[in-house]
Amino acid sequence: MGIPLIQKLRISRYIYRQKATGRSRFPMVLMLEPLYRCNLACAGCGKICWPEEVLDRRLSVAECLSAAEECGAPVVSIAGGESLIHADLPQIVAGLTVRKKFVYLCTNGILLKKKLAAYRPSPYLTFSIHLDGFRELHDRIVGKDGVFDTAVRAMQLLKNRGFRFTVNCTIFNGVSAVQAGEFFDFIMHLGAEGITVSPGYDYPGAPQKGIFLKRPESKQIFREVFRLGRRRKWRFNHSRFFIDFLSGNRIYDCAPWSTVTRNIFGWQRPCYLFADSYAASFRALMEETAWEHYGPGKNPQCEHCMLHSGFEGTAVMDMMTHPVQALAGYLKPLG
Ligand code: SF4
Image (cartoon, rainbow, N blue to C red; front, side, top):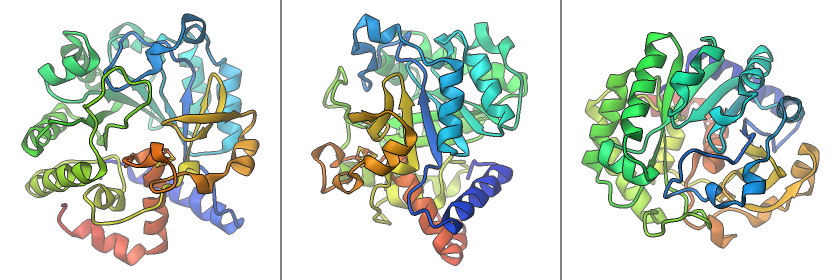
């Protein structure tokens, strides 16, 4: 798997400490969305459809750092919008890494060449480059020619300058296992530390419908892809049990509190993927959310969701409860 050992150990220590204090619900990841503004209008994302006054709003450096301290999660994924548009992003990243948060800075790569000088390589900073497939597919999904090539150049630049980087990839309807496998080979060849992968979530505001996979289709394609991966050296930014879940070999409930979201509206309920409401504080989010109303079979918006933001937390907890099974899992072939 593609997560460095030091990061795994720090996260494991954090989880043991949470459990030792008797907490059953706690976040492992903070999804920080300091702005919704983007320089693309991707087919699978509805953020750019917000009105201009919303797209002009930003979380301040102080709001971002206080969100990280309030929730305590060891991993902070900075999403958006296009995060590099935020003028104060270097200060936000520096403030988080100095607090020893493992930061994933999500970007489409377009502004990276222009902005990279404001960042320094660090074991706490990983650039997460959005790439959904080869040139034709990716440029179609993001609605703009040339973005694939720009993203690839961005990764080469990161590699040359000694930065950590991963690829964040969504699998949409119509992609075959062979195509996905060849794409994963390509990402590894570029030198990415790992691949974050998930089936596309059917966002209510997404400009294009019909590109999203239903749950049985997701399991089918992931099982086929991971079987192909038995003879390849792919590194995923996921736990082994989550990979098994994607393949349909494990059944998990969603743990939306394991990845909490702070954005320009507040603390988003219930999860990163959709908003029923917003809490004014992290504490209110954890204590006043009716968590039992969310997850497949409980809420129509959750029906086909298999995203890491809901299920990776459950997989990690399962691995920590069953360490022998977890070790055996890593020795078993994928798929
Ligand atoms: S199942 Fe998916 S959409 Fe539903 S609460 Fe969990 S993460 Fe969110």
